[in-house]
Image (cartoon, rainbow, N blue to C red):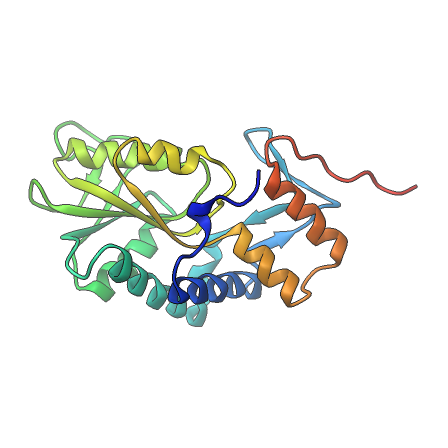
Length: 231
């Protein structure tokens, strides 16, 4: 499928943040283009590219730049006083939630994948009042499935959740925004695979054939097949 309108940055600040984030992810090796040796995921899906946002935690300068852009984006798109607490999804979202909470001067929580014990806070670590406006933070969004589970847990604990933020949104699976939108939640992301492809192409980071294979995958991720090898 072509790039959807909701993955195209709508302001100059958002466009610059998307390109800067994409460049940082490429610089630290968080994104790999490998069409000749495609990745096979647990879902069985095959892809010529892979992103690992967890690498960001080991690169202080890239991390600091991404967190500055995160706070600016949250303020710009949600409002300076929009939240009472920041919640990280177990486990990859926890460090990003901690850094954002520190930068915004807000309490930090984290949401377990599975409930531990019983009661209102069975899946939540940390403290907040009933009715608190909570921003859910994770490292990336693919199909949005984990966001739905974390949002449900927060709401069961009497939090108000209207927004979720990630460093990276795949931007190629319609259900990633549809599933969250059904819950009345908006997804915010600094960059998508389309932004990474644009930067990789502009800066000639990969051979044209690799770029073409990745673009083919982004256009049809559920049916993509690796190019046949010569000989």
